[in-house]
Image 1: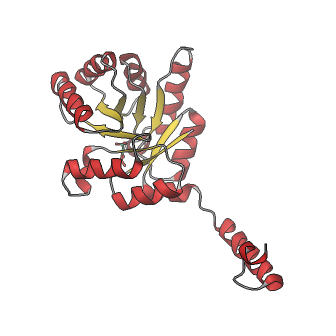
Image 2: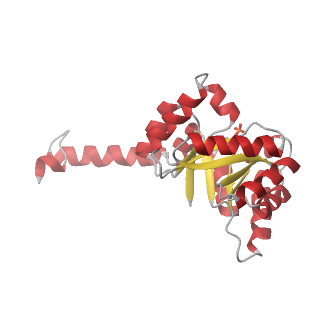
Image 3: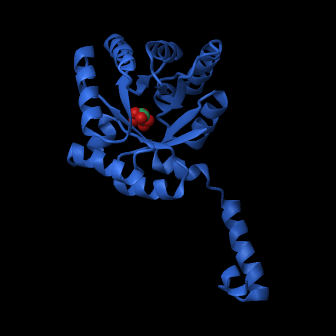
Length: 227
Ligand code: E4P
């Protein structure tokens, strides 16, 4: 299972990169624009934090294959990292994916709302396909079902290596259900990612361990004081 962080906020990236077992960061034009800074500076700062092994997914803006291919080339030339080029699924996007795959680029298909878009992107050469689970739910669709149907179809091809990267989450249930439905990777914003491991009874248990221990061995003491 792969967990990625869906933000371009440097403080959040520092925090989760240090404390959570994330394997990369995903961005899109909206996420980067939210930070209101110099584009190159933001991307390079993210790479400085996560290093060159963890994945960084960066999206193109071009609408036609030619521009997308040129943007991807420039990104690869200027950024030193484990880069995945995010390309929205469209006819031109699929064309660009096929060309870039042959040239050895890592590709993430994005902007996905249906299971067929996932399957087509996989056929075109995408490494990851990112269905927007919450956006599908928002318009009366079923984001988790998009994941499960695509997973079922992709699983018929035993050689398939392309992974579903669930995206656009607003709560833990959407993430958890996507994982059960077949998403091998998920990208999650900081708020929801924090909630993934939160349980009030866990916090209560930690407090109780400390106070029970303290009653016998001294409040505020830990094993460093005893061993
Ligand atoms: C992933 O990288 C997507 O771009 C992102 O999860 C979209 O999320 P949103 O629907 O919350 O904007």
